[in-house]
Image (cartoon, one colour):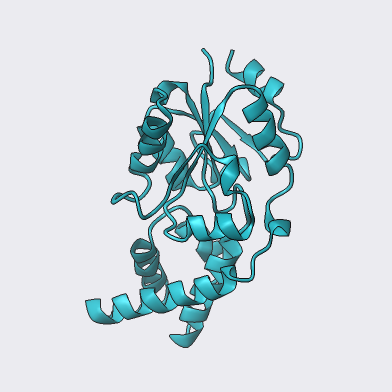
Length: 217
């Protein structure tokens, strides 16, 4: 078996935007007079904004109407956008650029598969858009992870069969999406938080293409 393409989630994999999502949700919770912890935030990784808001309100034991929910979601997005406007290339996670270059030099195609509608804005801010052969973001998909749509569209845009694709993900919903799409998966983070990945690594500092080839040969 040969890996022909690698698909990367954005938040928590390429860049640590996860903390900006957390800061924005924590501010919303604070405005609603309850605390929102980093442990709570684990439940929000990899899912859509409205699903995240539902979980947040459940944690706070708060019920609101649809109009209020839409206002809260818009406020959260405005907060998040204000935070990411200040991002710089220094916020790319360690080892990512080297590994992307290594994949390209090895003839492996690279795509981004993110539920974020702000993905292109972030890629531009950190000056990394040119490293991806395809970018599938929240503006190109209608179904949130664990639905595999974002990764299947990435594979289709690259012209690669799903079984020849490898996904890098830091969220359980993303791992489930890759599995549902018939792809191979490497989790980024702690093994106890990432069930059903083929392998789990802490980050890209020590990840090498030859290691990848040995795992999937």
